[in-house]
Image (cartoon, rainbow over all chains, first blue to last red):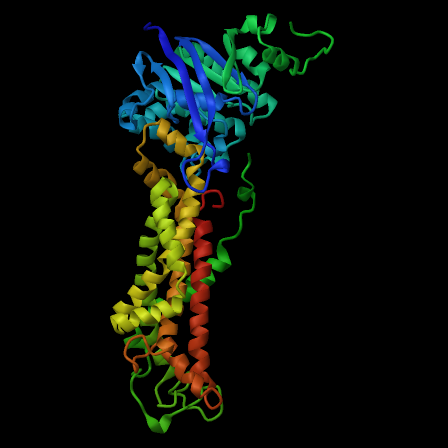
Length: 267
Length: 283
């Protein structure tokens, strides 16, 4: 059991539906996650794929405990964090980090890069933040001089590298990457993915990679969870998902991948 | 992804210089009024009443901007009037800002029932007609500098609360806030270290705007004789007096009016200029 990073059982989460809230009384709730169960073993690169509104981002935010589930359990390295208070989560937070989709929004525009990366380090009581920041910049392949820059002075790809640097600076066990390349052009995408692959290898990270893009997932991940309308419709090794998809929805997704040669089809 | 604002590097120059220059001039004038004012602002000389400014025929060169109907020097009265106007602007502006911005920040960031309470309070508050409210307050509190300041703070904190709440709400949905939570920052800490710096330029712009408004409110209260004692030099009081004799002595009305106008304009322009100056994207 100890080599499991995440053990998730019957996870349910719902949001109030304010559009249908009656004048008096509580709003009806829309269930976004409908009882998910899966494990993330240590060292795995897990792809979470699904269409818009499938609940994949909500799942990610629940795993990182930005959202509190209604019921079910989330165990992180054996600790139940399902309903843990923020104060109880704080010491655990250095072990699971997140990279956000839009670095324009996830990097505070009024801080320099050094401050952005150092923030989590200081909060977790790291002493020598200065050298940690420079080391993190080295790891993501940004010049050390960038420490003094503001986010708006960087390109999209460079900004996303800062986001990655912030996440890896704490040397976490687990990183959640939520659609981190969907805002980038194709060549930046490739560079960021290469970097992520390298970091996973070098640091022995466990990674959950959320994307709607199956070709990106295929390249990076060893196992894939396919989500559809708040449920897991497929949970299998990457090869199996691509060669012998079990669910209808997976087949639909696979058919939507643009191919270099349309006559040759997956599965 | 690219922030378009970074390419439109506006010259900070003229706007900030002109408005800052006028405010500086006024502050110096107010501080050193006893040294530079050519006359005692309260000294009446009924034989030298309604003297025109120097460049008009029949003027006395001793009175640069002329005298009012009681023979008091207009320039000296404007200088002394600046003392009251600027004191009110500074104290009332800062207090209004502190109270309003704090409530707005809390409402916009924490949302929920805190926001409900504060926002409803703001709504109710704003339903009172402001000038009537001020006059009512002064009537209860009695005239005097403190009463003016209290009246302005009590009426105008809602302006800050509204704007800052909206701004804090927008900032609160940004991922850097979620990112701070992932890093383990407390809610309160996030509000102060992540949200506040991003709302600060707006607060600053509002503050200078509020200073201008405070000057106007003070002038209005002086105009209706509800400011400090009636013979004390105030811009509003001068305008009220000048109004009655505008056909015989236009300068008594016009010069305080121009001063008031330039001051309020400068405050608002200063705010805009400073806002740009503190934005790292525009800098």
